[in-house]
Every structure is written in structure tokens, then in C-alpha cells.
Image (cartoon, rainbow, N blue to C red):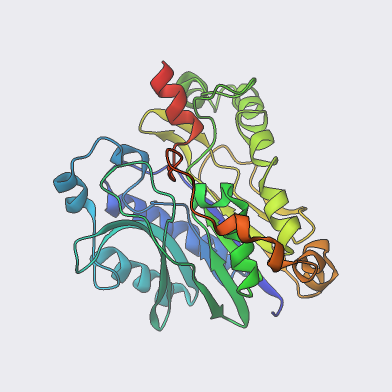
Length: 322
């Protein structure tokens, strides 16, 4: 790895308005490059927006989906990367040659398309097919991996990225301030968002409390710390289909410490300097070398009958109970 400046962004998208969302990606990329960023990362599904996909039929979802890399959104990202001489990462809905529809994260550079990663644990729409592989690449002198939103809730996924050599894991999300049965968590009243300019303190208290930041800090620092990696967290902010999201774009170092974080109640980008020395000095770096894989057979055993793998986030369970 080499020292590198990386950006994590947040913005309020518009449902099914790719042109607008790509315009925000362009503007925030410009801001990030002005601060010296060499890689700019955006949130999950940010090009079409995400949560509104939930009720779509297969045909409706397919109409939103695009080929990668030949689709118009990936090509537009390449234009942005060329304009600002920077690597850009962003989320979209992909349809492949076999008509599988996936939640995909695309990476492009000034020279063109580089790679993609598809979410392993999909749930927002039953017609989305899950990805089935990890992806760690060499990028600008660094080893880079990807893990989308819920994928990060299973520690095995980030650990495998680290075992594949990832030094930086990009973690695009759409999360926070969701229905929950956990004490202190739940949704944020839209009126607080709409009134944020007049009363920012009330909204900031919600975003930085158990509904938002305090919940994220239960596990984001852990993933960085236990694996000795940099974690780059991007998220949306503002009204998102039926809930308010908190943004809180941040970058964490291999000690689990925050090196850059947004406190803005709106569209923003933060840039952090990722340095080489911290990884080999971190506890996680040593933990990876202390592993005893001969003891871990249980981790890869298939689940017993009646306990088949299913991805069901807590906020969906809360919705069902309501």
C-alpha cells in the first residue's frame, strides 16, 4: 500500500432520476478532487436511488437495470472520471446477459471501466439475484475490496476481503434511522429533516444518537479494527422513499478510529489520508496471522434443515410486526 487520499460521499438522491443523481455525483466528485482525493466513493444504488425499488415487479426492476459496463450510467461515470482525472465508485442496478438483476457497485477510472462487485445479501426486492463472489483488486498502488451494506453485518465477509489482501474496503450503504425493535432506535420524523435549516440541533441529535451514528459505531469500527483495514463508509442522507437517512459519511483507520467524517446535514464529501504504517501496526493485522483455520470447519457447514440461509434485516421485521 502507499499513502493515498480517498473520499466518501453522501447525498440526497431522487427516486428513479438517474440524470439528477449523476449530476450530484459529478459535483461531489469535483469537490473531492479539489481536496486532493484520488478515489471518490458513493453509496449503494446511488444512481437510480435504492429503497424505492422495494415494491417493483420484475419487469419494473428490469426497466431500471442496465448493462455493465456498456450501459449509459457506467459510461457517464467514466466521463466524470475522465473530466476530473480520478477513480469513481458508485452503485446501480445491473442486468447481465442471462437476465440476472443485481445490486452492483461499479469502479471506473479515466482510462475506462475497471471492475464491479455485486451485493451478496440482497433483500430490498425479491427479484434481485445475490452476488456469489468477493472482489479484491490492485488500484493505484493499494489492495482494495468491496462490501455492500448488509454484507458488512456478517463479519466473515470483511474478514475474507482482508484474507484476500484488502488494505482498504469500500462499504457503500443505505442505512440508519430505520424501524427497529431495539431500544432507542427507530425512524426520524420527516418534519425534522424538512425543518433542518431552522432547527439543525434537533435533527443532529437524532442523526448522532442511537438511531444513527451510535448504532453505526457498534460495528463499523469493529470491522476495521478486527481486520486491520481502512473502512470507507458512504451513505445517503435525507428523504429516501419512506424514511430519513442520516448520511454520516466517514473513513475509519485500522485502529477503528475515525479519520474523516461528515457533520453536514446535506450533500457532502469527506476526504481522508490513508497511510501505510497503520496497517502493520494494527491489532487486526496480528489477528489475521494468529488464526487457526483447522478449527473453523463449523463456519462452512451448511445450516441444518429448517434453518436455511435468509437475509431479513431488523427493520423489515419491524415493518412486518407493525
